[in-house]
Length: 117
Image 1 (cartoon, one colour):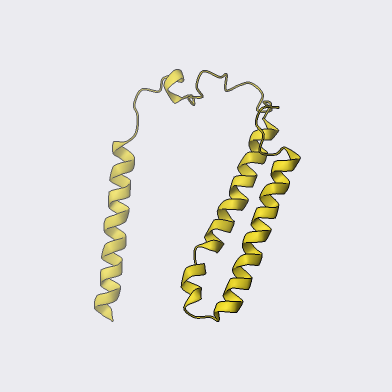
Image 2 (tube, one colour):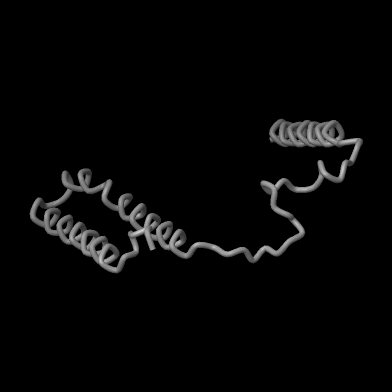
């Protein structure tokens, strides 16, 4: 028990010393205003943060996220087949895929997948 406590203490001590040494080595001596300011691809960092955002892009990203989660629900279906009844597995898989396809056709008819307008 004493050796375990000694091991944890030595590990803590060595990691603390290494963090202190890294902190002192990484300090910059010359503080240049332009080097310490954040790089934002040419935009003025002092300006407003309320820039216009494309709602269409947000909607496409949200639809992608929803269908991505649904794909993760589809992946275990072949594995479940060996553990369940074939008729219940077929019914469950068909209903789930039908719900996915109906959702996809609804988004398509609403124009959410059309990027042109």
